[in-house]
Length: 182
Image (cartoon, rainbow, N blue to C red):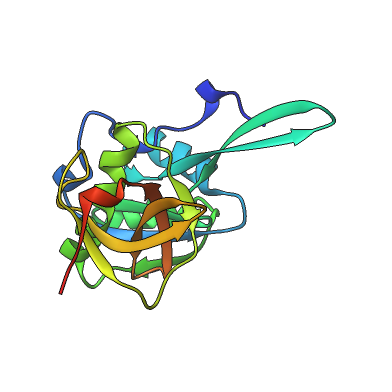
């Protein structure tokens, strides 16, 4: 288990927003449990990437453990030139590289997640929802974000989906801050 300081940055370079990254976006489908190691290798080669992570808390034998895990297990998003894609392939940590046909669409899907991470929101993996009401946040820090609303145990969560991967994440929102999109 890594110490907090041993985890790679979730966005590299840290000072930039993913919207400012230059080049072509790809999605690396990593070999099992290789996301963080691949992120460190990209970091060391100055390849721009986005690896959203979340905290998982577990208890064993009376002890509490906190682990920082990838939000989308097995995937890391990266941006660069063809030589960067080849460098990622050379790491031997990648099972497949997925071509992103809709570059702006992927960035639009990822931007709200990046914003939430930078604000310290409690993101968690969420089951991808194929059907449901699509909503828009009308107030607060997430204003303008669109997703599908999910309710569990009296709490409302906004599900933010990455359509290309068939995966999603969710964040708790105030019901009053959400409106249904027609």
